[in-house]
Image (tube, rainbow over all chains, first blue to last red; front, top):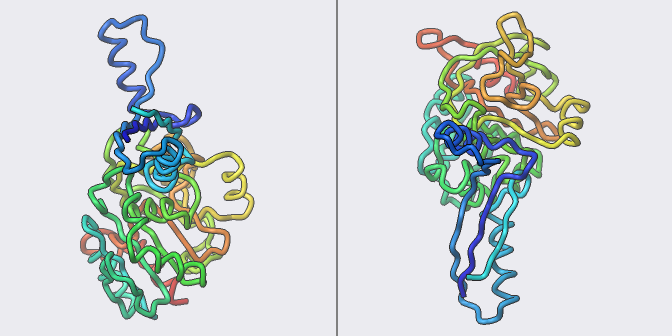
Length: 79
Length: 225
């Protein structure tokens, strides 16, 4: 079973990389751009047939290592 | 006094620290990250560098290494723990200190000497400094922008858990003297029990007047006091 995990900085945490990318795109003329937050993306394969159990496993991986929950939010999606 | 310096793949300040400790007459041992036993230590130093290539987040992988389990156990028993630069990042990732170290606000790797104020000298790490003494130490980091929530920041300020703040040569703590954007100009913090210090600047680089200054020596000598 495959999952994706997207990790982004919480909205109150300054994201300097995102800001620079945002400013650059604006300088390039992308005037409709409202905002950018940069993050990380993981694809995770799990040896488990049960949806709920597999997702719980991924959730635990996020909390224990992949995500610093003090500054980052994460979203798990089944692929 | 017995000290241990933890060595990870990618550590690069470990020998500088060993030399600084030996200069202050510590009996020092180097301890490999895969070891499951910590030698008898009054002080454990987690050095700077790029442990595990800074993969995932700076310090995140090192915080889960074998030896860190032992360091955490020792810390809970009151052993003195000093984390410098990447070592500070590792202490935070290991949960021994709170907060987070974000990328420098200007997105640049900073390598320069900065002025610091010793905000709290009533702890095992800073007792040889005078309160509000100005010192110059070197910084060399990309993720040193200390951040924490308002509740924790208030605790740090109220309980006097901030050891060092960035300042200018007059001692003013302001935005212009803040190299990396850290909240309240924080350069180093203590835990509640004050047996753990995490700091971004490198005291071990300032122990020899031939190559720098000697402003770092007092930190190592404080530990002997």
